[in-house]
Amino acid sequence: MPKTPGGSSKSDSADSSRRSRDLSVFSRAVTLFNAGKIDQAKQLFDELTGTPDASIADAARSRSRICERRSRES
Image (cartoon, rainbow, N blue to C red):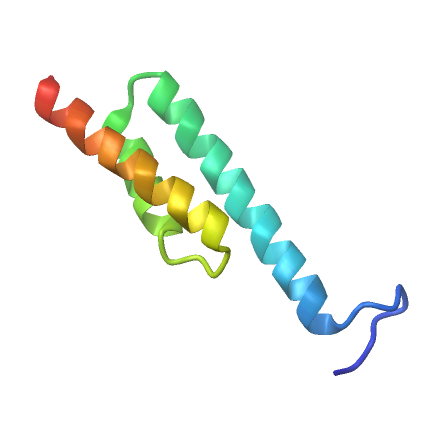
């Protein structure tokens, strides 16, 4: 694997970039959830369930289920 000037591989850089994007989307989803925009938050959480980062995907699945329950309650 080719190395970047910092010594990491291009794959490491892509993984880091993907994780950064996913964390940004997750943060936006939490903000929407806290603002009461449950359906919009659920869409973003659902989008994140397919991310390769297992910890983000698991957290997104959990929060998506919470959104489902909140939607049923209202």
